[in-house]
Structures are given as C-alpha cells and as structure tokens.
Image (tube, rainbow, N blue to C red; front, side, top):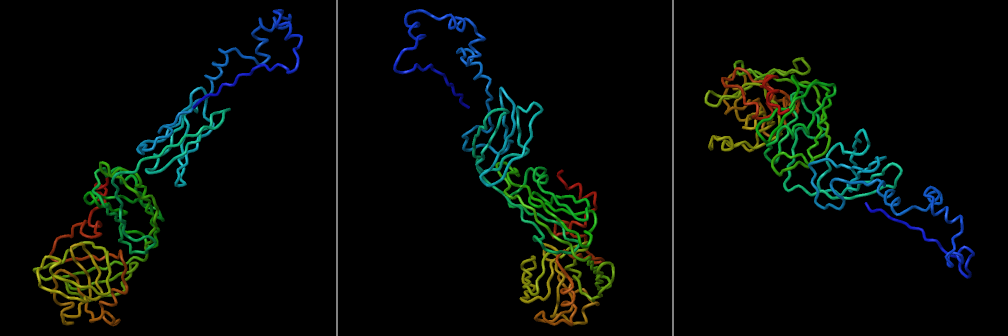
Length: 412
C-alpha cells in the first residue's frame, strides 16, 4: 500500500515585504528565529518536522498484505485466505465473494494476522477489506480459478420424501473417488431423534449411510453436502453445497418364508396381512436376506434377456412390481400363473410372486393389496430360499452387514 508525503511551504504575503522578510533579505536574523532554528523541540512544537523525522513517521504506518495477492486472477482455492499487517494491528477484516458469500475467520493473539476458517470457493471474485487500528480501511481483490473437472453425488431417497424404516441414504458419485476420507468428511447425515449414523463405501463411486438398526418411525433425516471444491481425485472437485431432508414413515417389515411359501406383513409390530406366495424354483432360487424396496411400478415390462436368461420370458405388463435388488429381484403381482401355485409351489425365475390380475386395477387380489400397503424403503426379508444371502451392494441391502462390518467400511 502506498504512502503519501505532504510538505508545507511557507507562503509570503503578497503586495509588500514584511519587516522580518526584509531583515532576512539583508542577512539579519531576528533573535526569536535563531532560537527556533537552534531548538529541535521548539521546531516540533511548531509542527515543522525534519526530513528524517517524516520518513520515520511514514515507516510506522500500518501496511496490509493479503494472500492471495491483490489483483490475482487465477488464485488457488485449496488454502485459506490470510491477511497480515506490519507496523500495527488489525481492527477488522471482511472477505466477501461476488456470489454473496462471506468468509469468516479469526485473528492471532497479537491481531497481526487473520486467517479464514475455510478455503475460498472456486470461480469466485473476492473483495478483502482490512482496517488497521487507528488507520483507514485498505482493500484488495482476487479471483479464484475454476476447477478443471468436477463430480456430483446423486442421492437416494428424494428430497422431502417419506420412506420406510429400511431406507439408507445412498449417494452415487459421477466420478471414481480416490480420497474417500476427504469426501466422506464433507458429508454428514443426522437424525431426529438423534442416533449414530455411519457411512460405508461400496466401491469408489457409492457411499451409503445407516444407523445400527432400522430408523425409528417418524425420524427426520438431514443430509448435508459440503462437497464444493473438495478434491475427490487428482484434479477432480465436488460442486455441491446443500442440505436436504427426508422423513421416515411407519415401520413395515414383510417376511417371506419360501419353505411355507407365505409372506407375513407386520406394521409397527402388528401383523396386518398374510399372503400365499411363489418364489424362485430350484434352478433360479431367490436371494435370501434383508432387502429394501428401492423402486415401485404399477406395471412394468420384464425380459429374461436383461438378467442373462436369454428369451425364457418377455412379459410387457407385470403388475405391481417392487424392486428388491439391482440384479433384478422383485416382489410383484402374477396374473399368468394358476391361483393354485401360490402358497404351494416355487415356480419363478427368482422373484417373489403374489396372485394378481392383468391390468393392475383389481383391488381384491393380493398383488394389488400388498403394493397399495407398501412404500419405498420398506423391508422384505426372505428366508429358506435355498440361496445364499444377497450381496449388501446389490440394491439398498446394507442391512445384511453387522454393525461392526458396516463401520469397517467407513473412511473416517
């Protein structure tokens, strides 16, 4: 910051010479002027400083420095903003972005340095206003560069939605994450009523959060994403800075026993329905374990080719289909099988079927009733299927991991 020097020159009255001026011109100096000229203290009291004294006074004026430097056009955004002062102390510092954001910060004990609490955002112009004690405010501006490549996290469930007690908070990233700890630290999931919520990585593009046991009915869940400018991989930065909330509805747990070929539906601990079902046959057994409804369709097309079974079936209007696994396991209505099958035979290619009617509009059939009573996030447990437990990453099925196994998958 520049320093101005102002010098005072004596101005003589116009029109005539004063007596002192005449004497001076003649080489005669009055006695008072001699005292003044010989006395340094007298000179200071009259407000006339020597050149050396002026320089010392100027050197003591506070000088402010900002990092990133004033005028920088492509400043980094991976370090905090720092403001320092020499020959003084800082009274206040304000840092404002052209996006309306501000950077809070703190002073050191001597108030000679101020450091922002977080890093500046990328692609943002900042104005720094620093005021030293007893001096005028000084300003500086800089603009941070934009990140080269970015990633976002797509989350389930949807914002402001209501889900069943088994619904995890699942985030799928658009770019493989190398620094899992940095990314996970930038994401928090909190619950009301409070419960410990822990993240678990399924590979380098998916991070799920859940508590030790199912959510309590009525829970409010808040997902806080602070991914903006977090480096997930070399040269790849997040862009999201937002909070979203979800809600948990009633507790509905349905247990399918493929030995007895029956499904018992309990809501808030009470049995509300029992349905005869048909599961996977001996060649196409149904996954066992805890599964969560992740998609719902009043009607959908199911093709064997999409699950590696060639052309064994192609049904364009499967009623009341609710997805349990990414690999293609559903609990759905079935209108093409005889009613005598349900409760007596396991004849499907791996899905759990209930008696239903073509068109998906008959409220008297079991497929319709179960679909109507269900929501995303409801739990369906399959037992005695003759198949191993489903992979926890195959759908939203992390409940098949113990709490210790789940926590072992956290990066923080």
